[in-house]
Length: 370
Image (tube, rainbow, N blue to C red):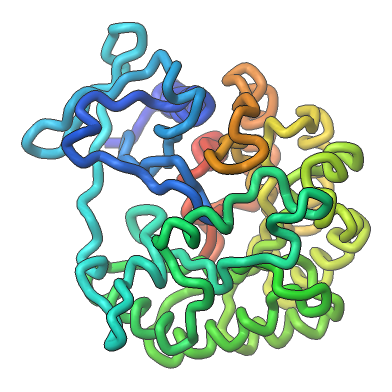
């Protein structure tokens, strides 16, 4: 049975509201926990809602005050979502991946090498450090890359051999369909492209798994060819913020990479990876106006770059942990018109070979493409 257009709009709005306002969990003491800290979606919980995986904040200030409450899951793992006491939907909590039960020969749990970010997406941070992290003059204010490392939930550097071993197990045991490789920025030259190359090469030698690599624009465009040849199928280069004053305030070090360099790098990357196989994260709610986000998104779409706009989630342990999440009304000014732009350009998340935009769990944007 297909959803009607009206139902699809209702689901998209519900997802957007949940991702802005968060979700309170009844019975969290029974083991419903989310991912806290780290370089990817943090202080979230993955749930299945209306047939798709959605990441919903559960451990933020906004979530603690959310009008949405999830009941204790029943015997089948199904929970009611209530808003102000009224049932608005149902969600299902996923089981723990089977590959989490395994460890490497030297005793490192597989879950410290890579994690399941969505129902079928394996993700890893190759280097759990960044040259800018921890320095108030250079660090991105939203970044928590060091938090999970400090908590002992991951290791500093994942070797290519470890990644290949875990990826193969995740495919065989949990039917993982694609993989995201990100990294802290190790230098101001290749900016992580080299470590992405050696890691992708090792994984592709072990298992046939589409891979998205994520790094800042390297200093030389030749790295795009090298990453493609190493086995990376799609590429993410994340703007996060787009207005110059917001970039300087929120990510003073990364703002040193000019927007003009990003735009040139997008052109060079699309020439290598193809239209629709290059994407960028934009965090709505850091200070950029909806008009600024839509304006740069229009330019990106014209280049063949997918602008993955997600609501900013304040993460514990960061300078912005008490920064408000964007309101549903704010996101409503961005996601519906952006979804329409993507549909008109036939630049759709489902057509990406691998990566965050293909997963689409961290934003309601994909629901508005329909």
